[in-house]
Length: 384
Image 1 (cartoon, rainbow, N blue to C red):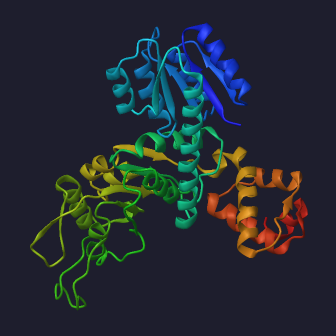
Image 2: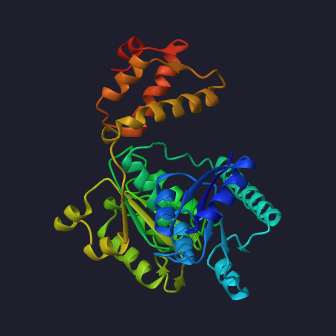
């Protein structure tokens, strides 16, 4: 059952529309002005918004822009008794699904609502299918820290702003990077990942920028680097705190000028790449120790997203455990195992040093070794 928010300063209009929509089977909430409506969208989830244009405190078109900043895919239908062609065009240009003049033709209004909801459902379904194909996992959790991450991703992803993702190993920094790409305007272009800690120092520049044939002993043919591979898309530099100072200087130039030069080459190549970096180190401390360039830090940290430790979000553990139980059961093609309350409480009380990665490994071990229901004894016997 779709949830619809009515934002209109005229109570009589709200009453009429509410009764009609309730009769059609929709859930309906009301707001008497734009500020109240924006707050309700922050607090609750809605499938569609009907918003008046002429209202006190905040104009309807301003409300529209605020709503789309919060939820870019939320369909908003504008209604007004002062409608003109110019107003309707302006509303649609700013992201409204449609514009309907007051008093509304009820048949047209209901058809427009149905079409907007159908379109939004198709968009969501398409994204789910694409995520399944790409195997992009959800960011699971309802804790305050995870809600902030979701909100930041929604705001930042559609831009080309560079993002620095920080957090301990195993917290899910790479997942945040993948969602920033998935919700960006570059989602149809490649996401290229580079683990800077896994590449030997003498090879990192060749890996990032490529090399020309004969540029060094083992360069038996030309190599295209990660910056070129990511052209038009996103480059994810994981564990960037382990990058050599020489490579940092070249990355800084690439970010400043949008150009790279292959190792052993002379030709400058233009690249259009959005860079997302991640690290488990405190880069400002690395700057003080002369291990990281301050100018590169400032270039990378336009937006900083800190992923909390699992020990800081223990209320999310039941959601994570149940998600992993379902995922592992699907992988092993067996029934989903249950976990009793005492076992779950034991997992919440544990101090996790490996964060989400450690938790998933523990759940997989329990699925393999325990019976149909995971108990506290299973945890004591097989885990801690």
